[in-house]
Length: 627
Image (cartoon, rainbow, N blue to C red; front, side):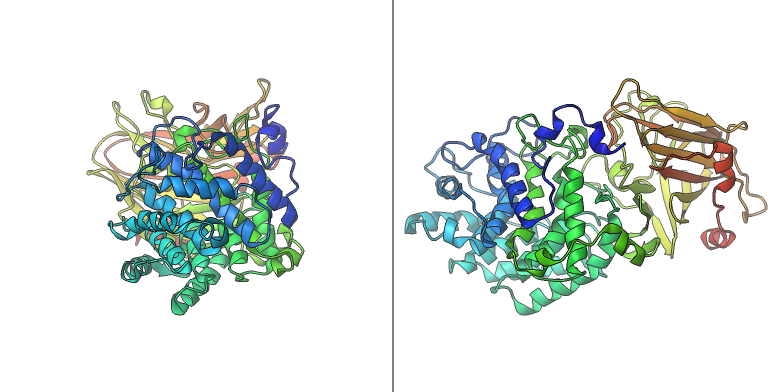
């Protein structure tokens, strides 16, 4: 059963991408129009604000409604650059004039270090590449007000993260129209961005252990927008292009043959902004991979999103990932925030005769043969493994202490393009914890604790090791081994000063939408392995005997079961089941090991047979880990 078969009646019509084959340049032009048009009834009469409804968000109405105005420009501007028709420039000119006018009721207000600086970047982008529509028709006084309002980005300190690119794009836009700008502040931001660079094309988003989708959809996408401008500093532009080429080779490992990317980290409500990097390479005429491959990576991702219920009845995009799910969202996510996804249409700037559009779309099965089944990415403490079905990331642990649900978004052992990950609700009862792809621990009273931050990370090829402490007197050393799809292995040594309940869980397996969707649960006779099956695939946990441990190591046997998490917790599937291994440990040292299986295939083997087929933890990996 495909995901499209699981949509409720009517949701295909609500999704603005639905029914579009998304094969040609004209298809993408039409798709962008269909994404934008549901916003038209929600523009204020002044054109300066888009009002989509109320939401609990950090910032006020000025910022939220400016978001709805500005973010679609990431698609509209490249449409214009490539010669595409857009019939609503008058709204944008009117909105730009009124939004920057302190005397107008829809004035966007005087920006400080706040969300309005974020949205300025789209306006700078428009000045840089669509000045004939948003600048040249303005009067002298109107232009001065626009410049005065945008100049605030040079007057306030910025958070030390991807925000520095907003200042770079605003100054790029001002310089492009020969308006006053601030070269000194611009250079300070370029220098700050340089301090975020690690290696191999990878940046960290301000925090050293935050390497997520802001690398492709912010650092590289903005870097390529900057590099494509004739006003860019040549040395900086060359550097951004070279890093994009390095990053592209690794980034393709995050996408599976169906076009799905691995959900991980924050801001996932931006959805197909995941593919913005592939589109930005076409925008900047940078063939980091063969043009046909870049085209396929972009179009398959968009086609995947075209099958999902990601919009309300009127076609306005909702907050969430694969469906409307506000629990997933950060406090800075408003009703207008999802329109950052229009960055995926940057390729529309490339003319019809560009090799990106002329190249035949390279099918996934062509380039997949060129990829190693397992690839290490030491700079982010991750290992990727993939096959024709899905892509999986094993992680030694990242963290983002700034926002909620950091353990779910950054701290799990594994993330899958097919199975996603889950965000636990508030645990009013221990049974409410989801903790897929995690080891969770609790005392007789109290909530589950999981890995939030690793105090140490090590990597050797496909082996990942980390230390973490859920309590001051509890230290856990975890080993993750990528063995090739659809398996991976885990080994834990728990040194504890207290008695603990321990629950380790695999991948959450989706259930179909029907009341009659069947779930099959199989447990081995000794209770040490469990396999869940639904029409969407299989997910299992297999407790392992362990070789290569110290002679005095005490291995704990565990009991297997299949759990039913609360609905709406997984980012991909609204309803799931979850394999689990549980035990109770006393103070001292305990060792736990398991094999984890997750596949969309219809497995015919019994749980006993699969347990016999499970890979074993290599003895040399154990000796490397415990030395």
